[in-house]
Image (cartoon, rainbow, N blue to C red; front, side):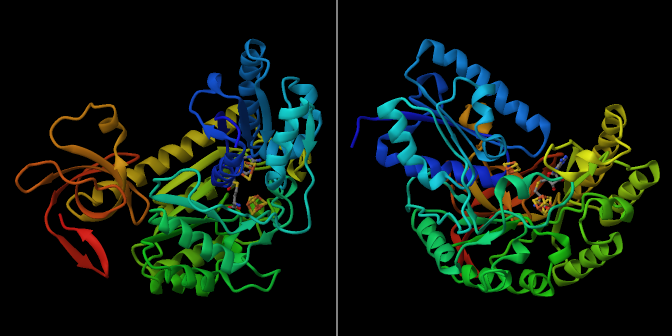
Length: 469
Ligand code: SAH
Ligand code: SF4
Ligand code: F3S
C-alpha cells in the first residue's frame, strides 16, 4: 500500500450524493487515501456536485475557484469533480475550471480508483462521463468509510424515468435501474454488523423499485429488510405520489421497523401546473392518497416539496398550493423557487414568473408552514418520544451545556430531539449513541424538540432494548 494520502470530499446535493461520497472514500481507501476535514491538507479533492437548481451549480463553481487558489500554492494537489454537474457538463467543465485534473460522471464511480492512479502517475487530465445500460454494481466494501454511524443511506435504485418538465435528474442520472434485492439486504446486514441501527433507502421513485428488472415489489423489499436482525429502523425516500401503492400504505401498518414518516412531494396544488410539470396525478388523487395513508397509520408524519413560480403559475394556481398545504397540514416542507435547467423542457415554457414574485411566494409558503410545524411540535409537549440517539448534541461537543448531558437523535417520525439524560442517582449515564431511548418532551422549537430522560434499568419493548425514561 502507498503512504497515507489525504482525501477531502465536498458533497453538495441530495442523499444520493452523500451515499456516493461514502462509496468514493471506500473505493479510494486501497490507494492509501484517508479522509480529512481540511481541503488545504488534501492530496486529492473531490467535489461531488448537484445540478438541481442554478444555486447548487454556482456553489460547485465557487468552491472550484477556491481550490484553484490552493492549487497555485500546492500544484501537486489533484482536483476531481464528480456528480450531476460533471455528468451534465462533461469536458466543457475543464474550460470553465482549468484547475481540474479529473471529471467523472454519475455512472463512473466504480472506475474512479483506476483514473486516480493514472492521474497520479502521469499527471494527465481525464474525463469519463460514460453511462452504461447496466447498473454500476455497487461493490460496497463492508465497514469502510463512516464507521461509527448510527444511521446510513443505502441506494436501492439509480436514475429516473419520470421526466418532470422542470427536472434535470433524468438527464444527469440516466435511466431508472434497480439493484438486486439480495445485494441490498447483504449490504444492510454488513452495515448492521458495523453498528448501524437505521437505514434510509434511496431512489428517485422507490415505488417503481424492481419493476423493469422483474425483481420483487418495493413493499416486499421492505419486508425482507424488516427481517434483518439487529436493525432497528427503516426509512426511505422518495416516493412519487402517482405510484404510491396500497401495498406500501399497508406496509406502514404492518412492518414494525418502518418509521412513521413519508416524504411525499406534491410540488403544486394546482391541477393545471401539475399537468405542465408532467407529474401525472391530480390534486384530488394526491389528497385521497394522503387520507388513505393516514387511515393505515394515523400517526404518520407527512412532509413534502413545493416549487413556487413554475412558468405560468398564476395567482389562483399559487392560492391552490397554499390551500393544499392548509388541507394536508404537513409536518414540514421544503420549498424552492423554480429554477430554469437548460436540459429540462420547462426552461422553454412561456410566462416566466418574476424573481420578486417567486421570493414573495416562497416567503408565504414558508410562513404558512411554520405555523403548522410549530403547532404540531407544541402538541407533543408532555408526550414521550422513542428516540434513536445519534450521539452527543453539537452543543455538548462544544462543551456549552449546563446541567446534565445533552444528546441528540430522531424520533420515529423523523423529528430531531435534543435531550438531557441523567441516572436516578444523578450520575452521568452510559454512552447512549445508537440506543433507542424514551424521552419526555418538554420544549418545542421550529426545527427540533427538547426533552429529558432519566436512565433506569433497560426494559424490553418489542424485542428491542429501550432505555426507560
Ligand atoms: N425524485 C424526487 C425529487 C428529487 S429533486 C421526487 O420526484 O419527488 C428534489 C426536489 O427539488 C424536487 O422535489 C423539487 O421540489 C425540487 N426541484 C427539482 N427541480 C427543480 C427546479 N428546476 N427548480 C426548483 N426546484 C426543483
Ligand atoms: Fe425529477 Fe420528477 Fe424524477 Fe423526481 S420524479 S427525480 S422530480 S424527474
Ligand atoms: Fe442534485 Fe443530482 Fe441529487 S442533481 S439533487 S445531486 S440527483
